[in-house]
Length: 396
Image 1 (cartoon, rainbow, N blue to C red):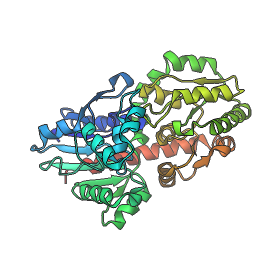
Image 2: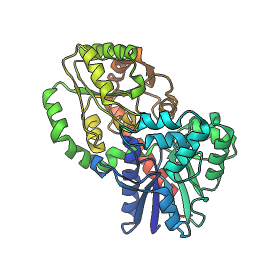
Image 3: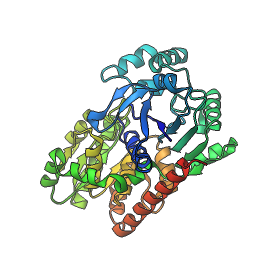
Image 4: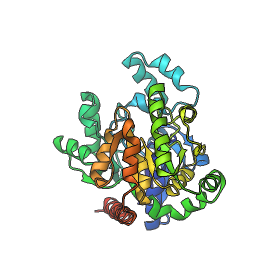
């Protein structure tokens, strides 16, 4: 591997996707120090200010290197079922999202035309690429991708995804539900943990350094009894649901004796919203609650690492907590299929995905878990990911 196109959804602010690029890049450069890495997404973005990467647009990368024997690695994530409209909306700039949805979101033909013009490529599933984009690639690899809703896709999009996957040289998925759906379509895929399962093993020194400064240092000083890292996406933001969450967090704070720190795991459209947290805090009686403002992914990792446990809707909030051997649970408000599928594959012994009204009781149960057992499980998953990645990227 001399030049590697590392492709993923790290062109927008989402902690998990941004961390994939770091994990894969670290493992590749450890093996091949002189390797040239090209970070590519659907849009050109510079997320270095949030701990991410400078990302090139896929259309430009494919035009430049489509005739060369590059290695292409899908970095990971729930890429198989993200359609062009969703991808384009999540890449809109702050303040533009609602205007774009109102202007282009009524008719399917208009959505597709706008998404195509926004992304510069004509694809129903733009975060899945095969040899149509890089016909002379030395290797195209899918690294622990997910697609729990693959079987429910429209037939044309599903056919596109499957055709692209059939053109890859190595395919791994992160949950058994996706693996089964692909097997039913005649495609075999190996199972491996999510890349972020190795974040503590690979980047603990960096994460600990972020824990010693700024906003997080102040939070730790103000909450010497410890705190829980709490997160939930903007779709929890109706008044009734926020009132229920506030009551649950009040109970949890009182019963556990820990503070509550609310943070955003993603700031891209349809992810997390600071205003939703502010409305939640106004409904709470707890005095040991605060909102963590930083969007730097290393600050977010450090917040979870220094917490007493994680509760929220984000899959990668859970996986970071897993990597540090901490109690964790997911809450659901509507769909939580990918969280449930991942927990079933790699975290069966702990609390899984619970409704909002069970938040307090479920997290109290999670806090009773044996920390040594959790630490051993974290180390085992990190080793499993590293071994699977080495196997995946070793030339045959």
